[in-house]
Image (spheres, one colour):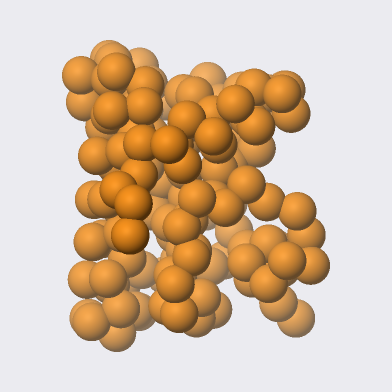
Amino acid sequence: MPTIFSRIISGELPGRIVWSDDRVAAFLTIAPLTPGHTLVVPRAEVEEWTELDPELAAHVFAVAHTIGRALKKAFDAPRVGLVVAGFEVPHAHVHVFPAREMADFDFTRADADASAEDLDAHHQRILDALPKS
């Protein structure tokens, strides 16, 4: 059975996708730590990041780097956080989010009630900040 991330990537479930290529997709989480919190997810359904093929892992982190630079620009953040947790969904993924303080890394503070309007606005800010290809 496909994971929820695979269902978002395939378009079966809605998602605010900011990056998509043949190996990776990145989309906003619905419970952000900070505005702009994005998940970078390999298309391959691999449960843990340590099980990723090294080349795919490198690509995931390269995309996370690009997303991070866009988040820093879009949200005028002094830092960008990057976390690999993997407990929420059994599909490897990297959390990338604007950070202003260490408390921004506390998952118990995630905004489970983020409004669709705010998420849509954050989505557009990220798209506008990404390099044009």
